[in-house]
Image (cartoon, rainbow, N blue to C red; front, side, top):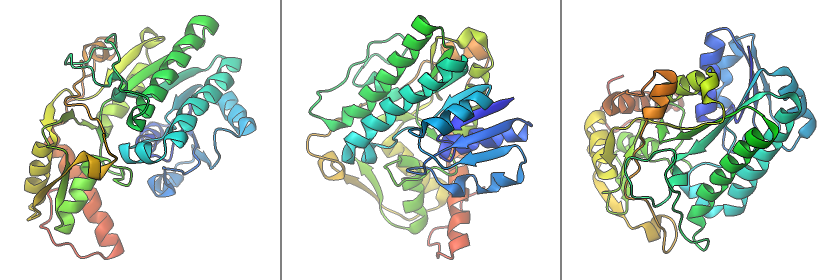
Length: 335
């Protein structure tokens, strides 16, 4: 099989590419490196089936050629991270909506299966926990740029499902819940790599808000397994499916667990949302998926425990620090 991965040099895209290449598939990576990095995929050059194209999706000719070659398209290219979303709402909306439209248009000409990565953010301020795929989406006001990401990804979903209903383009939509693991950067506000980096540095672990907001963290290996299984079953076509671990932890609890697993002496400090992001920033208190549909369609349920995930992330960042010769103040984490 030949797979096209947009955003293939990103965190999830690189892990997906690695898994496909390991099992003998061919992978076409398309990425403009706006948030992705060649560091994520450099080790994949050893595979003869890997081909990468450092081009934006707006290069319609390249996109059309790659879609023509591919059997399946994984559309992962998107603006990511709360910090980036708050600071660059125009980039967020244009990247997400325009990029998805270009991919769907190109795929529709060849009737190629498109897997669209969405996000748990689309549930917004819905308080009916756990989130079911048919639940209402409750977003904040348009004056809060924080909601532009959720709105743009919801529009991506509407657009993809419209292509399925009107043009019979096979699509599958996955709403990803806080996927974490090695290679994820904290540059755009991702909480776990930031906590781990701070713990290894011996600097304060900064918790935004009260820390009582809770999330469910899914190991990237489990997320990739879910994506591959969904893409392999016809029953998932035209469906929206939650992908995540349903084990809930508060952000304060996450900070203390990171501190424990890394043996760090870092203090935990709390920063008000207004200082961390923007005045009037709104957050969701809880974000927990119902994964019954995923299990029903694929027989798979993400279940990697959080301590193991933290250890893997800490080991990755520890190796990076050693590679660049940065002194490590905290004790070594178990691999």
